[in-house]
Image (cartoon, rainbow, N blue to C red; front, side, top):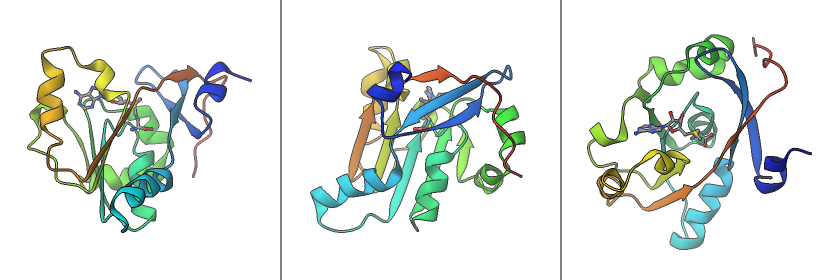
Length: 157
Ligand SMILES: C[S@@+](CC[C@H](N)C(=O)[O-])C[C@H]1O[C@@H](n2cnc3c(N)ncnc32)[C@H](O)[C@@H]1O
């Protein structure tokens, strides 16, 4: 068993880097984030924002749960986009935008999720980024990791 499978047992999914190398992304299913929100507010959330959405898996899950789902990522993953057609609609519709969180207006969303994104911030930028989330219902930020995947993921179409 990979070390990260023990450390992040919640779920993982394959994706491709811009250089074509294959990786596993370790994350938390949106349904679990929804449950955290519910435990605070005793009602269902309506909206979800993924700060560092990568190929869009979390936005897709949130959309499938009926949430108004959006995200941004500073980086575009072109090969992954080519392989995984199910994510394309989120980029085509601009629900996921290629953008730096530092360039965003304050985020308005019931749930905001940062998986590893804050790890990229230096001490100067961290307070600026946290300020972007003052208007969200709940900010869930974790430090996560990726692991090399033994082979390229298969196309889903
Ligand atoms: C670990 S991935 C998280 C992927 C996805 N949210 C998930 O949980 O499966 C973190 C992402 O944050 C993005 N990122 C890093 N700095 C960023 C910034 N300043 N603005 C937006 N996205 C950023 C990276 O490009 C990377 O795709």
